[in-house]
Image (cartoon, rainbow, N blue to C red; front, side, top):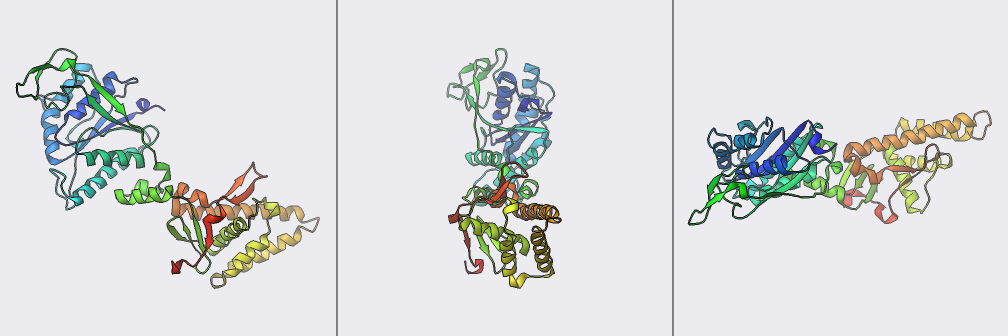
Length: 388
């Protein structure tokens, strides 16, 4: 679905002391863009002083430039109120008037990240984010946050205004008829706002949302935490297996697997190291898997005994004509269940994009699929993680 077709269409801006970027961007999106993107609501992230400027210039009865723009171009109702102007706060909770300290930068990064996460959580929404206003760090964080959480329907842009209207505190949008404003030059020469040209520069961005663990999409993780997760998922995959603890390190993430899932993954890892091809369940040497499981001597329990006995019985039954079919069906089901249970454990810790390189994956259509761990030998090793 195209962004303009979503029922909830959001314009999200950052601004400092130039509230004009809201009306300039709104004009570009809803008046001259093809196709037009008419927001149903506008959200502004700004400082305490910026909020005051937005209230006085955009939302007041006079001059009320936001209301004038809607009237001049016959735009429908758009929700933009004091409740959708969001103040940026310092690390100690006080509203920011400006961004001067390192801790202030960290605080606004988290605030902007939280707002983008919130607005993109609604599947019925399409977000258009503008980085045109505010200090450069504000625009950077907004663009980065959209890269982390943005979906296919979300867009990022920068608004461009022709000279001499650019940075003119009296200019808010190109009017449909002549409207005299005054320039910033010493002579304060007269200008006609209807002569201005406003352009919207679309900014492509890399969408990393699918690489984030689902908890980061829901919970209040900081900007830095989300970035670290994205970086981990972008790193080249590597797998370290510690047979002394049933722990594995997938990339930079260490997790504990159940002994049986660890043994299953270790079996396929050793096949890669030995240069062996993908296997069909009917070719699987379950004895190799049982040997991996048995080697976890400190972790064994009644589950091992039951597993070994059941697999041994099924393997022996393959040689009996009256039992072979049932035995093969059992081994196929067991093979698929073990793959599925390992997948669940990896997904819980890593999310789908993070777990994908470490899953036992099949090629070809079932039931003829052949399975393997799709890593290269140099990406796999067995080691004691406590010593690293």
